[in-house]
Every structure is written in C-alpha cells, then in structure tokens.
Image 1 (cartoon, rainbow, N blue to C red):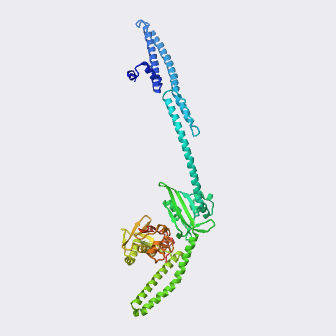
Image 2: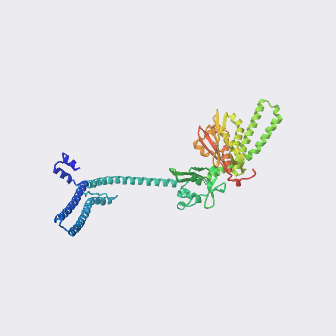
Image 3: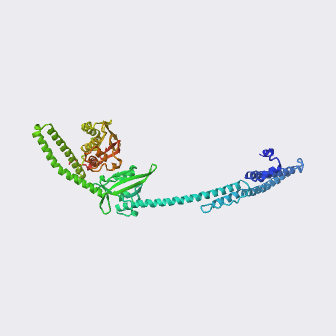
Length: 535
C-alpha cells in the first residue's frame, strides 16, 4: 500500500502523505500503532545485541578465562530480563492507553443511544474524531430524527385506531345487549367467555356469574322430557366436530332452568377458527314457547281432525262399495265414471286422514320402533319397486346404484320403509315434468350407512329450507307445482328417524334439485330403549 501511495501522482510529495495521515482514520491509526510497537521491539533487540557485542570485544577471547565469560553472560542475562520487563510494562500501558482512546467514542455513542426512548429523542453529536466513529455518530443522529418522526406518526395512528376499536367495542356491546335472543361465547374447552343479558335471563342467572363456568354445567337440555346425554348436546357436538349445529323448534328440546322449569328453545352453535385451530363457538338460543304452543295446537288439530273424519269416511266408502255392488251393473258410462271418481276421492281422503293420525301418534309418542338388523339396500330396493308405477305415471326414472357389499343397519324395517317411501315419493312428485331422473346411492362409514336420494326437480327455496321439516309446511314452489298435499311426509320421516336414532339431512338449490340423506347407525347403541311389540 505504501508503494501505491509513493507511485501515485497525487501523493508523491511528503505533504500529500502527511495529509493522508492527518485523516486519522482507525485503519491508519492501527497501522501507526503497529509501527510504533515494532520500532520499540527492534530498538530493544538492537540495544541488547550491541551490548552483547561490546561485552565480547572488551577482552581478547583467547586470554579471557572461562569463569569471567560466564560471569559476563550472567550479567547480560539479568540485563535482558530487566530490560524486557520494562518494555513489557511500557507495552501494557501503551495498549491500555490506545484501547481507551479507540473505544471512548463508541462508549459515548452507546450511552446516548441507551437514553433514547418514547419521551426522549434528543441526540446531540459530540464525537469529533474525524474518522469513521464521527461518521457513525452522524448516522445515528440522522436515524434518531427519522425514528422520532415515525414514532410520532405511529403514535397518532395507534391513538386513532384505539378510538375506533373503542367505538366498535361499544357498538358490539350495544348490539349484544339489544339482542332478544340469548348469545353465549365459549372457548375450545366449553368455558363461557361472554354472555349477553338475554342469555343470562334465559338461564336465570347473572352475566358475571356465568363467565368462567362450563357451558354444559349451566346449559342443561332435555328432549321429549328426558335429559339429553352429553354426546348428543349440540354445543358439545359443535366443538367436537368443528362444524355448525342447528336445532330448530321442531326438534322439541327444552332448557332446564334453575327453578326446575323447562323452557322450549331453538339453538344454533357455530365454531370460529384461526386457521385449522378451533378457538371456540358462538351459541345463539331463543325462546320458542309460542312456536311450541302453536305446534301443540297443530297436533291437537291433527288429532281431532283425524278422529272426526275417519268414521264419516269409513261410512262413505262402505256406501260407495255397496252402491257399486248393488247398482253398478245398471250404471251407464257417465254414472260409472262418477262412481269411480267418488271412490278415488274417498281413498285420497282416507290416505290424508291416515297421515294425520300417524303424525298425531308421532307427536304424542304413540309409535315406538321395534329395532332389529335390517339390510338397508334390500329395503331401499323394495321401496323403489313399490313406487315403480308411480314413477311411470310421472315419467321419472330411478337409477339404483347397488353397492357390492351388504349394508346392515340397526333400525325398524317398517318405519325405515316409510322414511324411504316418503323421500322417494317427494323426489318423484317434484322432479322434472318430462324425463326426470332420480339417483339412489349408498355410502358406508365406520359408524353409519348413508342413503342418498338425489333428484333434478324444483328444489327448495333457500329462505324456506329451515322450515322444511315443520308440521303442515309446504314450500311455495311445491304448492304451485302440486296444489294437493298435507305437508306431513318430511315431518313424519324426521320424527321417525329421531326415534330410531337416525337423522335426515338435505342439500338443495332452487331450480336444480335436492339431495336427501338418511343416516342410519350401524351399532346397537340404543337396544335397551326399544320395545318388542309395535303398538
């Protein structure tokens, strides 16, 4: 590097070299200190060598005795030791001095940086060494100004965002308090984190007392006047399955309150996630006492209507048969057709009355399943064969995908046939007017068999899907397509399925068809609850 300096046109003169040295950068200072130490070491060894040579040439080596030579060597050794110790001490002192001078600016910068904080952004340049440390001090001062500006802006944004969050929180609290329905928020372990006043009123408790308790301890349910097991609790199922669970008013569940009363409710439990991790669930419950009373009124109506209509209809059918037997041979074509029409109308009315009586018995708990092992594939195929003429009349074809293996479920064969027949008849009745197709398929899981009935019909309007299993309910497009109908098929099917510990689900889109799924258990979990005789 010195050769480069000497050869350079700009630094050929001694003045230019001195100017470079006057910059006093750390690099040049390190070089200078190394030169000084090297010079001291060379001078030391040179002096020692000189003294040694002088001691040898004072006398003639031939005339000097060996004892004198050894004595001179010993003296010389002591001189070496003393001189080395002195130079070592000097080197240590110089090293500490040099190190202190080198590190002092850095320590000063460190002290100034440590004092920086949200309320103290003053940074004054105090290092004037003319080297890289001074440049570092200047850069830190500039960064401090920028950081102060960023912090000021960030502090303003944080305050603004905090005010927005406060307003959002106040609005959310107002919404929760104004909700008529009870709302409860639980964590992934089922511990209550939040509850609105409506929920506290439903549970006959105070909000502060509810928070921190387990939801299953305070939110006890019963179904058909029997305590609901934990495994069947909607909130427990929501947290375990990580999927939404909705229980409408037709399921007839009730909330057991502190005073011992049972409050009819409908319930929805929806989980909320952070990625794949479930954080908890939001539970929405509503008092449906009025709806339940209306449902009971419907049941009473069905009971009275079925019993008051059955006897007149039986009498009417008996007289029509008697009329045909006695005077049928004397009737002409027109009179004969009138008689046939009256007989068909009487049969339709009898069918409606039988449906009303079945629905009434279901609502009163008068029908109990007789559980046994049933091959659901054979039962479904039998239902398809029974509905063959009905499908021909409506120009509908059924594609039956028979599985390779048998699927045996634990169910009541008669009631299971009624469920399949109701769903299949609806699929045929509301299929396309020409060339409709129905697909019946099966799916087996570890615990259940799923029977799927898919059609290409009118579908169910989205706004009316929640009421599809209600008693005497028919969708608007179904009433337009088929004016005659009672609205008891799906209601009865769902009631029967619940008694057999099965379930019915559906997916539908208006104008594109529906898929109804019957889930039947494989294991005899509830054999003790069944009866041996059918009422």
